[in-house]
Length: 203
Image (cartoon, rainbow, N blue to C red; front, side, top):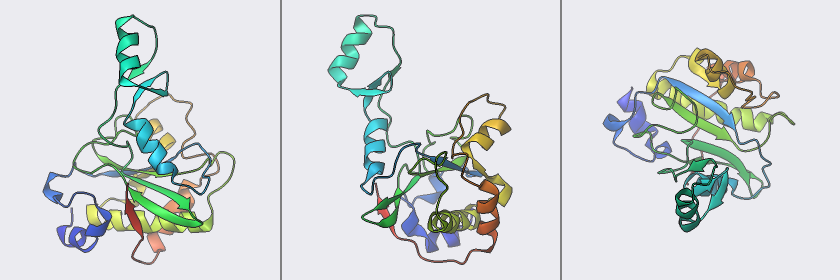
């Protein structure tokens, strides 16, 4: 961890108490597997993650408790403390925006066996059906480039979700961050991209 660089890029972090950060060794790239409709879909993802859920649908606390008491067979999920990802990138009003999500002082909720040692970045969209644009690749590369310097992360530790699952011998059908998302292209771009100040928004 390079505290001088963390201070330089402090605008990118929700919590400035760097000494309390989890040990960052990896960056994991995700896609939302949904369409980016030019509105703030990141807010909808946060709402979903921080709500009571039954069979992956948002329900009220009252319905949640009632169905547990009735012994209903279903998948019950309690609200998380925050959105699962640390950063989300999406197009809002025809401009790509980086949303700052979960603080790095607590483990994420995005990748099995990686949440306590990684930054999770979610690109809003479905990249099984379409490839990211050059602008999107550049934006993710700029963000990752900063994190590799701040946390001294080697390029090979920047992984797509499915690559992280394979590394940890997790059998999964996930294609995340999408079959048309080229992780090798991203990693090569990170090595040579210039440093710029990024536009960010707190989620």
